[in-house]
Amino acid sequence: MIRILAVLSIGIASVSFGQSINALTVAPAAPLRAKVGTTVEAKLQLQVRSGYHVQSNTPSDPYLIALKLTWNAGPLESAGVVYPKPQMEKYSFSDKPLSVFSGNFDVDTKFKVPANATPGPTAVTGKLRYQACNDNMCLPPKTVDVKLQVDIAR
Image 1 (spheres, rainbow, N blue to C red):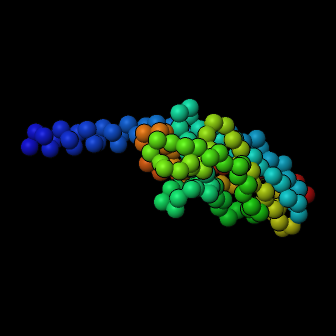
Image 2 (image 1 turned 90 degrees about the horizontal axis):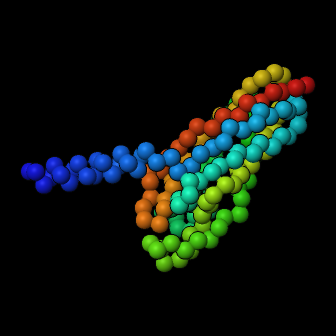
């Protein structure tokens, strides 16, 4: 019984430790200024903690969790997300190089401002899903909220 409790304690501690690591941060984005009927580009600046990587938006294997930015329906229409070119990196746990992002990089989105958009301050919200790993383990997948402030003009 004591052995079982010890094993469970170690398992719970390792899960708690993995959840406390903030391996990816999203820098606050500069407010967007947009005109009705035009297209505007937003840039999200991401930083992966040293020693970690995240799978790219096109992972090398189907079981790997892709970095994915999605936008909710709102005052602007997403017209496409553009990811940077991934790095092909070799890790000890994989026979082949993996398509990853590490360090600092940007993810860009083009938004269409509909002709019927209401002028004034507003926001667009979305989700960024990723799984951060180092050379020994992967943290649980994570989804974070992202928000862009927008000032729409006629």
